[in-house]
Image 1 (cartoon, rainbow, N blue to C red):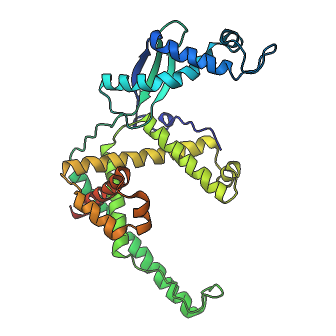
Image 2 (cartoon, helix red, strand yellow; image 1 turned 30 degrees about the vertical axis):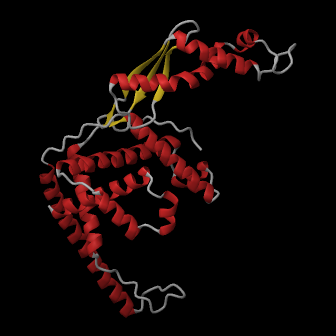
Image 3 (cartoon, rainbow, N blue to C red; image 1 turned 90 degrees about the horizontal axis):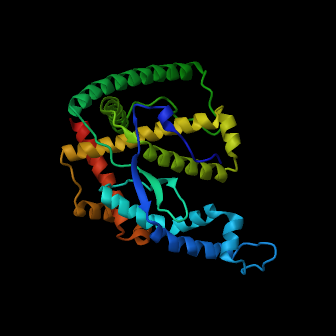
Length: 324
């Protein structure tokens, strides 16, 4: 697998917002006990000539290994609480886990760490209903064009069938493989995707880099699992697609950016249109649509019900966009 790092800012600079930076300060009187605890713990595990394992004096281990490893271990104890306090003090609401960068980590002095977080972007919808109407018109043209192609392909199919030119796979004799007209659901999906694309092109929300990076990391994890399941290496996958690792991560970054933008746009439309999902609607969905084994597994967990609530809300937004 590749290293899970990407810099999508290079691909779409106008749509990537800088992360929010918070300075996390840890006084030495707070850091010192954690440092000493980490030093003693490391001293109990290292092997140094002339000392039995577990009997290495802490100061000797410190001199041999340097303070860096000890500070890194100590930060695991003190940084989480210090970060939470800094976030509350700055009145921020992070959407993801932070990314940390050391600023100053010296023994005997206060420690300073920079935390980068992703906050919810501000979405300015503007006259989004106008965009929706224009997209609906474009969708009608797209549907008409596709139906014309299908009609032409169906006529050619019938002609080839009459002339005996059809190539039928063994076992498929007698099956009707003629091109089929678009269903109502397919037409709705074409219209909805056209509307979404129009909203992305007009609203253009800026997304924090950290959100995009985390989404790409998730996508890479998923890809890795899929490749492992079919016993294909990452290098083989790239070779088959004729891509470099950098090209793949850039492609994933652009895809992730669009998905995240659309989520925030849909949420903003839901708020603007005052669309909500009641507890009763969530319960009804679970009772009617969710497999009993899934219900037994997740029960009434808030994470699970919130996921269903979001699904239902986005469906309401989709229905509203199609109805405009």
